[in-house]
Length: 154
Image 1 (cartoon, rainbow, N blue to C red):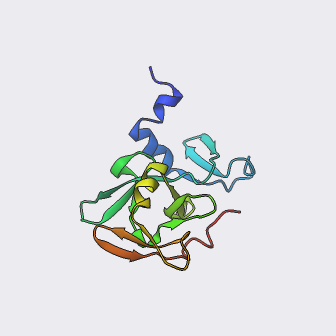
Image 2: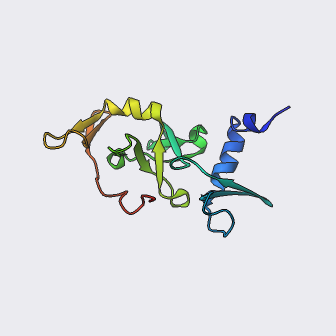
């Protein structure tokens, strides 16, 4: 017998749920539940502390491109990994990466993955709090400090 909690551990359920997740553009509960996942006639209204897409693993795709897996669904839920687009919010200490437009175009990097990445951030001499470069697989990427500015929820 399965219950609601165990369903969140089933990859097929996670894929089904997150592929249908989008901004709540209905007039129902929008103030308290900014996200919705439509599952047939069922409406799942969703609220989270930050963003619903949480990146947790970088893998190599079949074509050789690096993919950023999200929401613990492995290669079934991914976006192209863009090391130059990692962004650290110095106010909250969280790390972000671009997500699909359907999911608000921004996702959170999981704490565990962000801690692993923290060793690869480089800082300029002028601002020791904001990373300016990211070292990935022997290549140093200049971080794009502007891609997220128009996406941040207030």
